[in-house]
Amino acid sequence: MSTSSLILIAVILAVVLLAALVTGVVLTRRRRISLTEPEKEPKGGYQADSGVTFATPEKVEHPVVERTEVDGQPGVGDDASVPRDSVKRGFVEVDLPEAASEVEEIEPTAGRLERLRSRLSRSRSTLGQGLLGLLGAGDLDEDSWTDVEDTLLMADLGAATSADIIATLREEIVSRGVRTADEARVLLRDTLVSALHPDMDRSVHALPHSGKPAVVLVVGVNGVGKTTTTGKLARVLVADGRTVLLGAADTFRAAAADQLETWGKRVGAETVRGPEGGDPASVAFESVKKGMDAGVDTVLIDTAGRLHTKTGLMDELGKVKRVVEKQAVVDEVLLVLDATTGQNGLTQARVFAEVVNITGIVLTKLDGTAKGGIVFQVQRELGVPVKLVGLGEGADHLAPFQPEAFVDALLG
Image 1 (cartoon, rainbow, N blue to C red):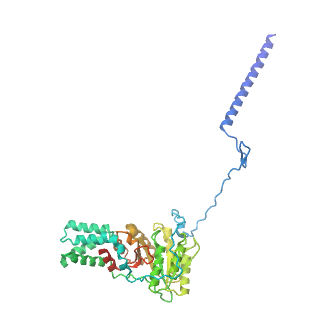
Image 2 (cartoon, helix red, strand yellow):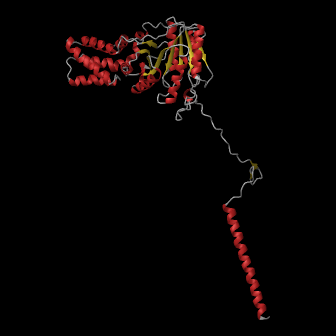
């Protein structure tokens, strides 16, 4: 074989080997790609090894929720979209009062606070008995007066009210020549009654005038017992011979209208209600209109609870009042406060007073707190009288507030 033939064979072998090498590299790369990058699914689903085709989930387009406010006005109830950080509450289970087959007999309101005085035992042990023990011990030195001040502060009377009471006690002890425990008790009673300003008008203005019923708005934050208070107030008015119509303007909280309607049936009062989530101002308007047509003495309107820190919700409350006033004067705006909240209750009271001009305070759960001094402080801060106090869960445990009877209950 010639040299040229050998060279040709060598070249051919080299080309074959090179081609085989390149083919091997390509196959190896493809295998790596198949191991690291799964094959794309066919449109509409993917094929499992078993041959079963599973539908791939389609992308869900959520509809854009339209905001409910108009020109900055809030939406409905606590679900208002202004402000945006408002906490949305879910449905709340409410224990409805037992429905009555007929109108119930109601306990008389006269002297009710005196009959319920035992329910102030916690406040009595903290405030009344503590002060009597200190003042009846004889001559008081500065340490003793410090103890008196501490007792007043712990009972939630507040610094300003406590200072005024101490100044009066120190002056009167000298001028009256107080020496005995009985004399100290008389002095303390007079001082505490005076601090409650017994000359304030504590009547609930619920008599019709100018041919129209009196209108009472019941307002407050969530959870203080507005609906229950409205129902109990209806019992107080009916017991005093008034005819009442109830307006369920709390359209957001589940079962609020049912709860109020049950209270109304127990005293023979009609309840006006609207659709769940409806406009509370519209319900309030219809309530007053129906009350005028029916010729009742008083229309009680239960409003939705709202956080006093939420501007939009507070503006909505002002709207309810303005809408009602297109038909009749709002005679009372009763702010319901939980007596156990102390200073936070005062903060709430100030904000509500700025929005709707509070005319009276209803203090609930007064039987469950040792800080009965909140009565003194809320009146001093707002210049608004406490008109009603809640002293238990019973249907007739809402009592008209009487300064003398309250102080007597505190002192025992």
